[in-house]
Image (cartoon, rainbow, N blue to C red; front, side):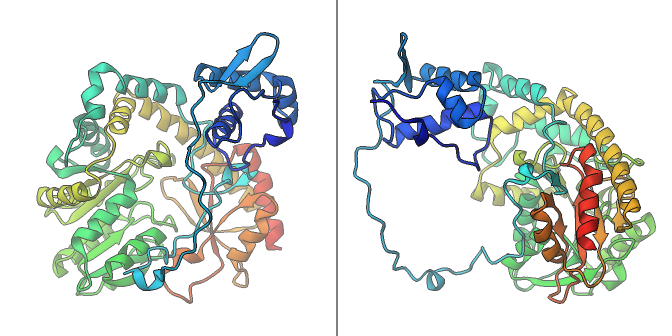
Length: 484
C-alpha cells in the first residue's frame, strides 16, 4: 500500500532545518503507528513538490531515515517503511479521562500567577523583531561551538561529561570565570567564591531562597526585571519598589529595615540608566549603615561598544556585602543557560548545598563545551563580532528614530542591545504591540516592568540584537505610523 502525499504535513511551529523537520515528521508517523511496515512513501519528487522544497532536501531526509532503519530503499521502486522500523506501542489508546481533582484546593501556591509576559515562540518569523534577549544566528560561531562540543565528547573528557560532580562544577569553567571574566569587571575571586548556575535567573532564585523569607525585606528597582519580582513574590518577603532616576537606584530611598537590595547598576533593566561612581559609593555606604546585602546583576557588560565599562559594584566592595550575578546566556545564546554567582565563601558554600538538593549541578558536558569555547579564544572573537554588529545597528536605530521623531527615554552609557522608549501619554503600548504584530513588528510593552498597579502604560523597549540592520529603518517607520 502506498501512502498518499496529502497525509504528510509539517508542523508550522517545528524547529530546525526543513530536512530535520521532514525526518521528524516521518519518524513520528512510524512510531505512532500511522505509517506501517512495508508501506510505500511518496516519491522524493512528489513530496518535495507537496512541501514546496528542493528535491535534494527530501532525498537527504529519506537517506538519513534509511541509515537509522526507519526506511528501506528498493531498486526502482522507491522508499518503504522498513521491516526493522521501531514498533509502535502495543497497548490500546485510552479514552480521554475526566479530571475530578480540585486543583485550586490542592495547590499550596500557584506558580503560574506571575507577571512575566510571554513572548511569541515564533518571533524569528516576524520581519521586524525588536525583541530582547534572543540570538542572531548570523553572528554566532556555529563551527567552533560544534568543534568544542566534539572535543568535550572525546575520551579525554569522558569523566567531565559523565561523572557526578555532586555539589561542584567543572574546574575549567570556574577557572575561566576567575581568570578572565571577573578581572574584566575589576573582581578578584577564588574558586571557593564562585558557583556555576543555570543562567542568571537561577542565580537570583538561589540567592533569594537563601536570604529571604516572610520576615525579610527586599528592595527592587522600579521599573525592573519582571522575573525578579516573580522570584521574590514566591519567597513571600516584603518587597519595596524604589523608583529609579537617570542615575539608577537612589540609595537615600532605601528603607532602614531592608535586608537585601537587588540592583542593575551598570545597565539598569529596562531603562539602561548607568549608576555613576559617586552613587555607587553612596549605595555601598547605605547598605553598610543598615546592615543590608546587595545583589548586583551585571548583565550585558560585554556589550560595551561605546566605551569601556566602569568597574563593577562588587569590585568596590571591601567587606563582602555585594553578591555578584553574571551570565553567558546573553553573550553566547539564551538556550545555553549558564551563569555564575560570586560572593563570600560562606555564602557560596550554602548556595552550593542548596543547589545540590535541587539539581546537583549544570550538565557536565555543557560546562566543558563552554569552557573550551571560552578558553580557546572563540568567545572573545564572537564578542568582537557582536560589538561591531551592535554598534552598527544602534547607529541605524538612532538615525531612524530621530527621523521619525520617536522619543528615547533611556540609552545605555556604554552600549547594550536595546533602547527604552516613551510613547505619548495617551498610548497604551500593550495595545500598540498587538496592533504591530499584524504588521510583522514585535516590540516589548513597558508596563510589566513596573511594580505598581497604576504603572505608566506608554513605555516600551526596542531591542536590536535580533533584527538585521537593513530592516531596522522600515521597522521604525512602521512603529511611527502606528503611533500616529
